[in-house]
Image 1 (spheres, one colour):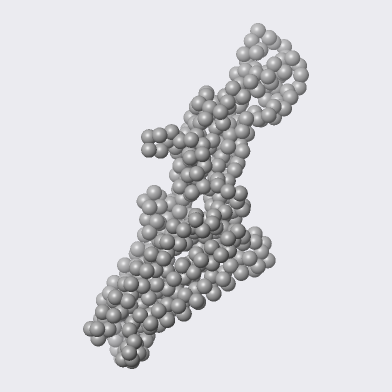
Image 2 (cartoon, one colour):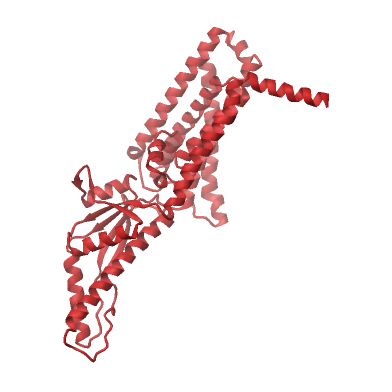
Amino acid sequence: MRALWASFCKDLLLLWRDRAGLALLFVMPMALVLVVSLVQNNVLESTGQKAFKVLFVDQDRGEAGRQLRRRLEQNGGMVLVSSLGGRPLTAPEARELVAAGVFQFAILLPGGLESDLQQAVEKIGQQILAGAEAAPEAPAKVEVCFDPTVQGVFRTAVLASLRHALLGIETQRRGRELATAMAGQSGRAVNPFAGSPLLQVAESPAGQALLHPNAVQQNVPAWSLFGMFFIVVPLGGALLRERQQGTLQRLLCLPVSGWPLLSGKLLAYASICLVQFGLMLLVGRFFLPLLGTPVLQIGAHPGVVLLLSFVSALAATGYGLLVGVLARSYEQASMLGAISVVIAAAIGGVMVPVYVMPSGMQRLSQLSPLGWGLEGFLKLFVRGGDLASVWPQVAAMLAFFSVTLALSLLIFNGRHKKGG
């Protein structure tokens, strides 16, 4: 019992001496719970209560467009946006915004919608009153432009709401036209809803000709990035072990600076990250289809995929070096490294799509390197992107790597000069 008590006191004393590590044991889990709770709470709202922002471009400006807007807003599932910066949106601008992922949906009403609908309704009313079967009319199509990264459940919800609103408008128009045409007539039973629908939804992806989005294309790059950034734990631990065992001090007695020591470690761990990413792509390409999932499609630019994976590996190992030189204990390295990566993954869209997060969390997601990488891979895998389209993400990753490497060298050399 005395040995047990002594061991207990010894461990408490060691923890108390590492006050920063002890604080991280409490602060970092709290931060993780806060972020994940915010993200997942909004996912629940988006499947029931929270309204989507949808671009709405009425090129007809007739009664049908006003009715459709009124019905969609009354349903409560959408917030319709028709102007930005005080200027009305055009159809090409709306498509471009959706293709860029700024908005997830755009509803585009063609010119002549009101007149086409009214003519079709009048023609059907005349045919019914004449005793003839209503001939099929070419429907007026309302275009829905969607971001291909949007998951199926959200796209289905928007389309269902739109079709319901269009059906209500058509039903009202048919009934009103028939009542007008039959004024003064009686004794005939007619069906005002005979014939095919007069208003239909035309669904199309924004941007180039794209692959059909699926869970594989979302999850393989997302969790590959998550795994790559988790290199921070072994990398940080390796640096600490070498420092505590005196290996680094002996190496620094040689005529070398900290630059080759850290660079060699960085390249070694970056190579591991690239192999890890390649294996994940192979799993998505060959193993997952055996389990019934779609085959992973990486787009038409495999060289750009390789470039983006390389800069992602550099960013991950750069962050690992920074954590390794900052931490003074294994507890600090493991807690700070692992939980910060989980938080960056949560706000970066790895666990839940960014577009269903609150607006504040969406702005915060722009600071996550995992979010940059995921956005780049989705552009290549789903949106049909090329080097020009993912260059902002490549540049952001390189900048992040440069900053973390520079800070690592600065701290490493400073501690060496002080003998720490």
